[in-house]
Image (cartoon, rainbow, N blue to C red; front, side):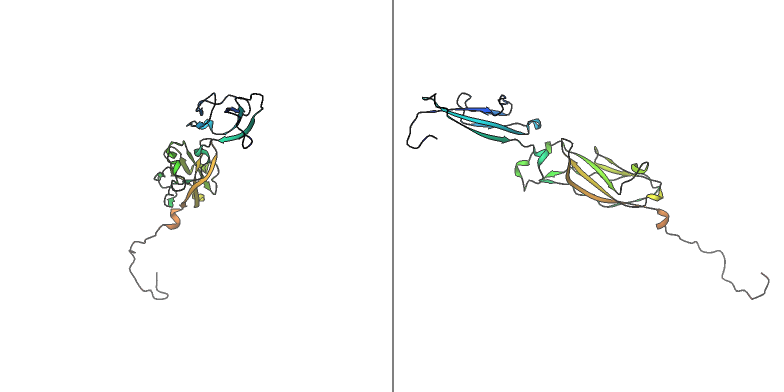
Amino acid sequence: MTTPGLDCGPYLWNLVMTDGSPIDPSVFTLDDAANPQELFVFTSDPVKAKTYQFTIQVTLVEYPENPGATKDFSVLIQDLCETSMDIIPAIAPPNQTYKVRSPEITYDPHNEFTADLASDPSFDWYYECPWTYVSSITPTLATPDDTTIVYDPVSMSHTTYTDNVNLTGTYAVTVTLVRPSGTLSTISFSYTITIVDPCLIATITLNPSPIQDASYVLRDPS
C-alpha cells in the first residue's frame, strides 16, 4: 500500500457512502465498524435493488498528518425477478377450434413460467417472484367483439364465445410474463384459436327420396 520498503505502521480503514448518506444496515454489514476489513451484503427486499456507490478511505494510524488515500467502488444489487432472462415459458396449449354459436369454452390453464436453472443455478428461488401474465390477440378484436377471446390472469386460462360469423378466422393468442414492476417482458408463448362458421363445414345428408324412379313419354299428360 505504501512505498515499497517502508514500514509506516498499521492502517486505519473507513468505509462511507460516496454521497455522504448513511450505509443501509438492512443491506450492508461491516465486520468492524471502526476499522472495517470486510463488507457483507444480504437483502431479500426488491426495493433495495440498485447500484450503491462506496468510498473506501485509508490512513496511517501513526501518521495522522498523512492525507492517506481513497478509492471509489460500487455494489450492484440485482433483482432477478426483474432482470433475469433465464426464464422458461410455460408449454403452449394445443391449437384450438371454436364454432360460432357454440357454448362458451374455457380451455385448460397454462402453467407458471419457470427459471432455467441450467443457465443460472442461483435462481432456484424464482417461484417467489410475483410474476403475472397478460394476453394479446392478433389480429386485434375491436369493441364489442373484444370479449370473444378472454384471458383470466388468475386462472391463467382463455375463454371463447361468439355468435358473430364475421369473426371467422385464425387468431394468434400470446401470453407474456409481466415483471413485478409492471414491465412487460419479452418472454412468452403463443398458440392459435380458429373460429369457424359451422354452416360452412356442416355435412348435409339427404334422406332417401320418397319418389320412385319412373319414366315419362314425351307429350303424355303430366
